[in-house]
Length: 353
Image 1 (cartoon, helix red, strand yellow):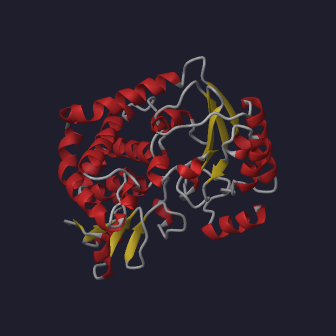
Image 2 (cartoon, helix red, strand yellow; image 1 turned 90 degrees about the horizontal axis):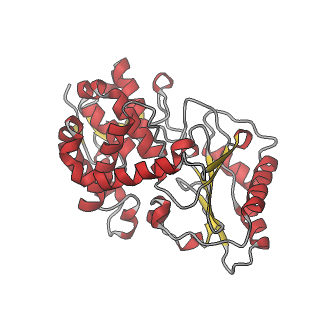
Image 3 (cartoon, one colour; image 1 turned 45 degrees about the vertical axis):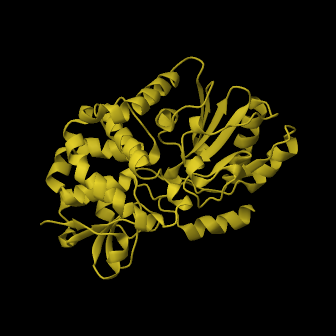
């Protein structure tokens, strides 16, 4: 059957397949925490959930309309796949890689299709910024993302087929970002980059000379949900990955815990004149960093290479010890599990505070 994309506001009067979002008047194919996605198709990304549903030919896919309440690469791939199901299954593995790179920033160039997927992701990134507004950029615009994103869907649903068939046709759009990612990816395997893994608390520590593009930086973080980035000159950021904002299906996770007590401990030691700040656990990728309160959501979402990271007075060995000790204590009575609810996470946050 031929399906049609509709703006999210139209779902009130048109029951639709809802991708990477939720709405009571729809059939949900979403990895959002608590979304009523059928167990048989659950997966880590919304695009993968959609592809599973197409493969299983779920009867709910007979609905004629498809929608989403925001534009991002994972959601777009899910919407596009429902409108082009045969082509989607033909390119299934590449689309799955695109969603992983776009949503979790986990580039794995050992996958034979990851390089091509990266080109397509970077093409979407470039065109999104050139023709519309960047991710989270709608916050500064007069209309909301839920309204504005329909324009992005209209453009990319029209243009994506051509670029999918021949990514090199749009080389001028993606080549600069791809080059930046590949240089950073190479840096992640150089001797001066050191990784320390603490699987019992879901933390990986990356010590590397300077900030890198997220797709490179997170390329070695699969299976971990917190990343402590330590750059030269005592420049640091601690981030909860998006993997703990959603329900992932391939492994259990620990819940997010608030960073207030950790920030307070660091501020007791900090003598640079700057303040350790933290974001709420309900943000998509909460950051703990010096003077982070000055960042808007667009800047926080953007690559670390695009924001100023300040020098701390705390030595790297001390910072690592404080953070590892804090989370070992905070998580000592918690076990990883699937499908934490926001209610559970918020209750834990009150206890931790």
